[in-house]
Image (tube, rainbow, N blue to C red; front, side, top):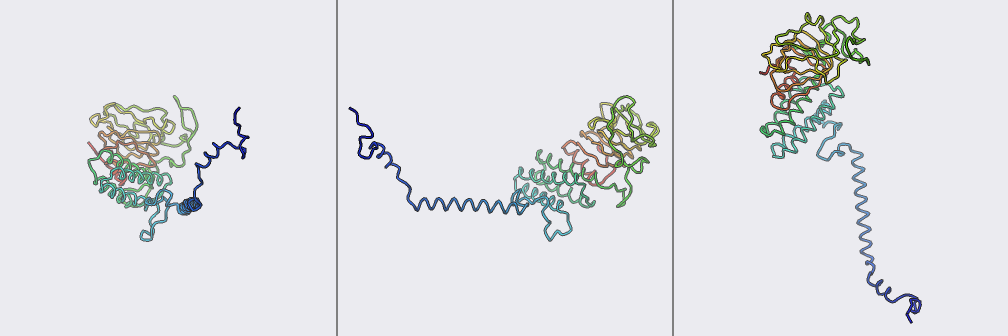
Length: 337
């Protein structure tokens, strides 16, 4: 006859009593200490979170100034984004000199992001700002001039700087103010031209170009043959309106060799919209408006060429860097064989 659990004096099996006695509770002082440490940890995390919310500069790290942080008192009068840009490039130089190339690249990318944001916000910048920034980018690259990755990151920042220059009011050479190339072309201001929603095809015409003297609307790329000169007489106008074309489509197509020996020239025109590769064409007295300019690293010749609200897709080698610097510094004439 078996011995049941209810046959014990306490009504429980003795084996359960022995198992229970193997897990003795922790001493009271240990439990109090654990509770105190947990409370302290939670309070510390809450306090640090509150400090970050109250101070946006710490949202990206204590060593990274926030884009909109108020400039220090010793740089009073300097826009906050310019202060952040200067700090990023100084840190890039310091990291590069210290041998931390990855950190130098990250700070250079941060500077490029600030430049891109400034361009999208149409932030104004004095001409000497571009000269100072080019010199700072040179210093970043000089820390490791043979590192291909650093060259690429610095060149991308130079291209962003050139694009920022493109959105600045156009300045005639040798002066501090004046009319833009689009105004001088005799047509309507590009800012006043709407973007019509019309079909593109043979015979398509932009409604905004009707009755505007000198405007020629393109709905497809125009081919250029060797030794051809495209000017106002050949075009029968002085303003190529390519805004009906896809933004990635080429406006003018020279021979596929794209070398100066082809003798292709474009003279005295304003080109608006779409995209254009600069290689292999001699550009003279030309204004690009809202065009995506490409440079593939070949021969390029610019004589009195203006860029208004343009974007650039340049090669990230030394040749692309030199062209980006020239545009950023406001140089309207540039030749590279």
